[in-house]
Image 1 (cartoon, one colour):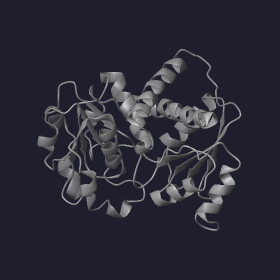
Image 2 (tube, one colour; image 1 turned 120 degrees about the vertical axis):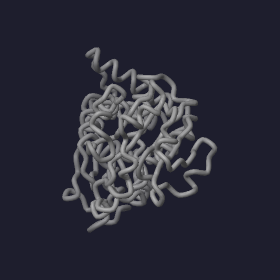
Image 3 (cartoon, rainbow, N blue to C red; image 1 turned 45 degrees about the vertical axis):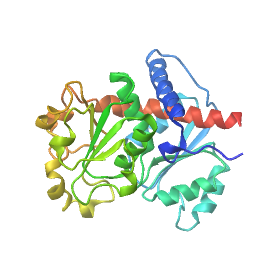
Image 4 (cartoon, one colour; image 1 turned 90 degrees about the vertical axis):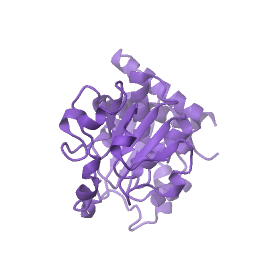
Length: 303
């Protein structure tokens, strides 16, 4: 039986995503109540990092331990992934020894090739195309603060990157309106906009008007440093300011997947202000991913 993978949000149905969100909220409550819950005793998660991260490593490693299992950190120096050994061979070997694999990588194609040859569930911890685990945390955070996101209006502001594409997938599955607000040349391809729930609005003051959730990201991610010189010139008008947030719904929330550069993509007054839920959002990586690990590993047992 082929294992369930989580490479994009579309690897789940809308019903499964709703269940994951509810379960993440429940696991968070259980943790705060001091309840011990260890359904993954004896299980091992291999964490392959080609791209560094604070939140991804800490949340997956802590989450696996809290569920009774163990997490194994593998840096680029610790594997031969795509170098001295083919991705296919690496997948066969590692997946024969562990119960699940989380990969944080630059190239999404390497992730899909690894999953094709893996015996166990593979989780996308981030690729250049998608960041689905962050969307689980974001959606859980919105549910906790404002309830169901269905029918709400979300604005993505900045570069049409992996987070933007993941928000497109979330809008399609969870049935909310997404306004993509990017400067010319930064928007995702037309295939990402071919849905009545997705609208490209290049002008920030128009895009934020009446929005219920405003989301942005850094202007140049790790691995894009060569683009940093050009990005500030193009993206400066897309900085999230108090003035822009005033155009949104009075109950609007602000999210950022972190790390943030105050004064670049967002003003300090916004990210540290009353509408910001970025710290809940960051913590929820832990709880949402625990729900995901349960879903993939225990579901795999039932097959």
